[in-house]
Length: 270
Image (cartoon, rainbow, N blue to C red; front, side, top):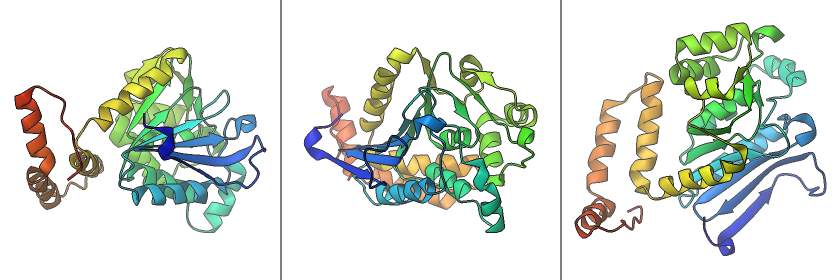
C-alpha cells in the first residue's frame, strides 16, 4: 500500500510475547490497521481494550494523512464481542463504553473497512456494522444473541441496525437470535463483498486502492453527510456548504485536467 519506511506501530500492551494481547495499531502511510489479538477467546473485547481502541480512533481522527482504517483480527473468528461478565459494571456506571466505541467507529473521519475472516458474534456484529464497509468470506456466519441472553440491546446499536439493514432484517436478527450464513449476510447488506478465504487480502487491497484514488476532501465530507442522513439528522446547510467548498478545491481542477488529458488524477487533498 505504501512504503514500510513510513510505517509506525502502537501496541496497547507492554507484554508483546502474550498471545492474548491488547489491540494493535499499525499506520502505513495513508492506511491504518487495528488488529484484535485474543484468539483463545475468539477475540473477545475486554474492558481494558475499549479505552485503547477509543484512544487509537482519537489519534487517527487527528491524523489527516490517514484516509483508510482497516479493522482485522487473529485466530479463527473475527470477534465474539464484548466480555459479557462486565455488562453489570457498565449498567451501574450509567454508561456503555462499548456503545460509545461503536459510535466513534461510525463517526470516524477516515473510511473504515472491517476485514471479516471468520465468524462474528454478539457485540462485534455492531462494531463491524459501525464500519463503513464489511468484507467477508464464504463459510462464515454471524448472530446477535441479545434476546437469548435476556438483554435489551443498547439503543444506538438498534438504530444503526435498522438504518443500515432495514427493519425486517434487524427484527429477525435481534428477536430470534438465529445465526445467518455468509450468503444471507451479503443478501441483507451486512456484507459489501463476499469472497473465498484465500481471496480476502486481494479484495481488501482492491477496496483500499479504490478509496485512496478518491479526492480526500469529499471522501470525508460525504461520509459524514451520508451517516447523518441515515440517522435522520440531515443538515441542509452543512451539506450545501461542504458541496460548495469542494468546488473551490485544487483537486476539482486536477480532476478536470486529468479527465481532459486522459490520465489518472493526482489528488493532494487541497
